[in-house]
Image 1 (tube, rainbow, N blue to C red):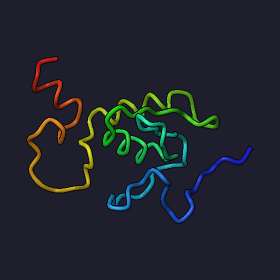
Image 2: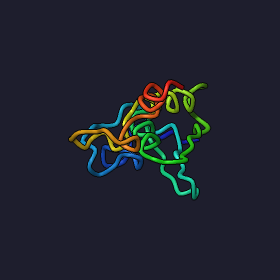
Image 3: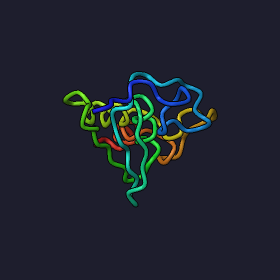
Image 4: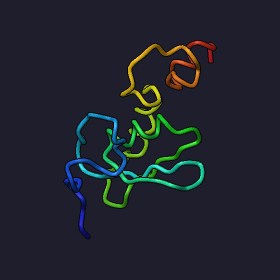
Length: 106
């Protein structure tokens, strides 16, 4: 089995072109949108992508360490959608899921 430890071109497919951050670690997850379109990524970009999707899902790749998908899922909860964009964030769609829960007392 070949394990992708260094993304081709320096960044994984889950990294948004406007997101300036580098990959953190190997490609270990697949993030899917509600229509089953997806991208493989490192934990960092997987979480950022998942946070930006409505109805997204994350799955660990076969070579990933146990708990990888859960870590990405939990990290995405506190990340604002498209977090690399600056500007005021006041609408629920611009806030993280954790921020929306805190606002609504859930």
